[in-house]
Image (cartoon, rainbow, N blue to C red; front, side, top):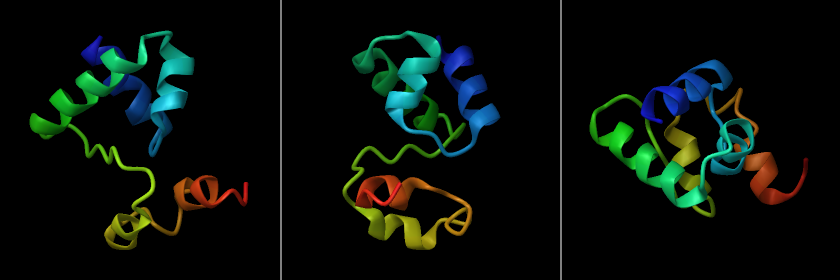
Length: 75
């Protein structure tokens, strides 16, 4: 499961938990647990609080990422 989720994240870039679930078919709890494990291993950065967009300001992908648009409902 870890390798599949990591491959999806690497291929898609910044991606939401919902999109990972849609692409893999895994259960939400399993995806979140796996993302936390991958983050602890230093494989990716997982931001679980989607309401806290202040973290986006320091992200190097800030100008490319659509995350803030989706949260604010502009897309």
